[in-house]
Picture 1 (spheres, rainbow, N blue to C red):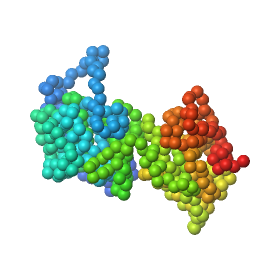
Picture 2: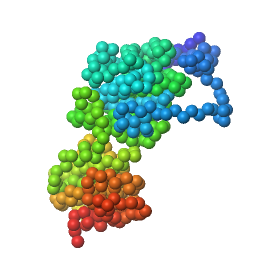
Picture 3: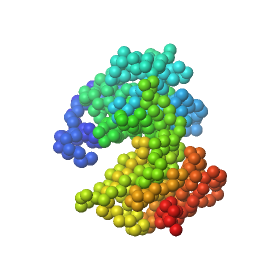
Picture 4: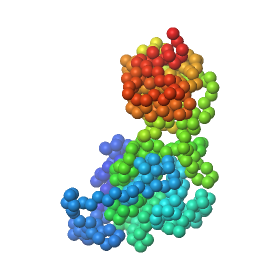
Length: 462
């Protein structure tokens, strides 16, 4: 027997309220509570008493930790090495992977290409689409030259029908595009609501874990860029990937923000072409290929994204303000970090920046948010303020303290080796990072203790 329960659920944070509220008491947003009518099974229901059963018919039973058998399952390697890198070395069988990104960024294209590769070499694939017909997917697959004898398409949104077909086909990989379009028929709440997304994800997680099926789930994002739905969606899955980029650029960045089987903040870089997504094997050259000779306000940093060092050009434009309050604008950089560095430059280096507008960006559309970029940011600001260029073959690594010291950073050896490989002749690093590691012979490593010392050496002052 079922009981009908009415409640109000916040579409932003998932907060439940027995009555309507204009403002959510949990997240503070206005007009986000939506009425949902849910059917709740009693404790005597079949759903509540029946244990989980695998597709093979076996029931999941408790067992002693010492008796649990551990099987070394090799990762499945796709032909996209950048995707393998982001996933931590390949696809883990039985994992649940969530991919989010803006509309039209290439999520479906990526998964369609991966599905074709998996169906060709690694098993049976079921591609479930709640947004496109089978004809539409087939047209895109022909354009991308994707196919396979074990590649099945299934345009459906009913989770009951989807689970029945999974039980019949017994696929090795399932693609859900997208989770916001799927629905549980037993629930009367609207498609895409917090309750529906939560239940659909729970069903997919059970399918993945009890049957060893790898499930890829596409998630829509909100206007702010976060994955739509309750935050528990990201907690339940094994891996969360964000597909970044913009419609004006052909380059896409796949970033791991959660990964139970590998490093977080790992990135993979792709280029969108007519034939689909192709890998960018040397991103450092990509971000530096359009750098101007003799330009002021430019400095190169070796940033570490996950385990990969990449060279990025940081650009700054400092101009006198036309209004009372100076303006600070950033693209791909943290606004608070830029304000902090400008305050350190004004206090420790004697630059009068309080009446100067500052515009900063990381060239190439990449987003940087690590302490090691501080020194390069400071050098680019000083270069623009003084209208004095730096050497084209210099790059900068280091964190700045509030007292003007240059603090040590991690993985300095990998960063310097990447700079030497690209062809840079001199790299500025924190003095405390000079230690027991092999310095490449084709690059000069300059250790600096303070910001003023770094500026004097970078601009050739005596």
